[in-house]
Length: 277
Image 1 (tube, rainbow, N blue to C red):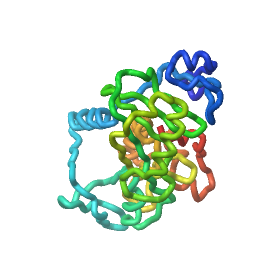
Image 2 (image 1 turned 90 degrees about the vertical axis):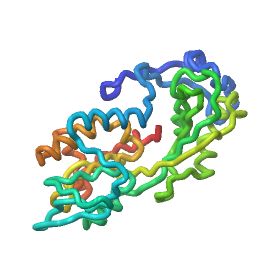
Image 3 (image 1 turned 135 degrees about the vertical axis):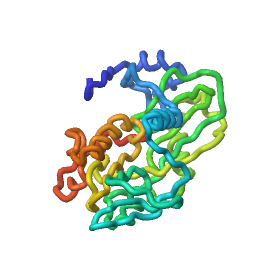
């Protein structure tokens, strides 16, 4: 049991029984010695979840404006009172900044620097095949993972491309670092063709934990630095951020993640959990 999540260890034979396509030989770089199993784990369609939240928010009266780029901020009395967009100014008592990989860009326009780096997180999919995987499989030795979508595609990914970049595209060395261990662990997939790949920009903090709280510029509030864990943390992250915006006070869960922790040296080190999957 870790943080309330039930995880159990299984031996090599049980791992091979659950995923028959795993390589049975020990004469490979990453032999199967055993596994950790989380029975309640699963996959979710990112876009479906995002639109589900959007529709629920709209039903509550939230205005969602698409294709509306934020260009800069407007000040009054030493604090931010509006965002200037390509479709005009939007005024607000409190402005929340939750723009993932572009957090540092907008922070500079607000007059301060964030201790974040933006990297590309890459994913790729194979041609579709009949059902062959029973669960998400992650190799902790190299951080490569693979699962099978409802359409039969094998969805694969791994570590970040550690070159600070805003280009949302894949790179060959990351593709190679993901595919090489997977085809050794699952030899049967070595003949499949990769159909497409894409990249998204994520922002990472020095301690691999998010930044939630008031910004150095009055009137602006931060929700950024989630790295590769943002999607999975949205329910909790959204709840504490809503509390902050509504009350102008930290939720007890978000207080340790305040921007000022870096100046105090009170880091929240989540490096062990910073795996892209």
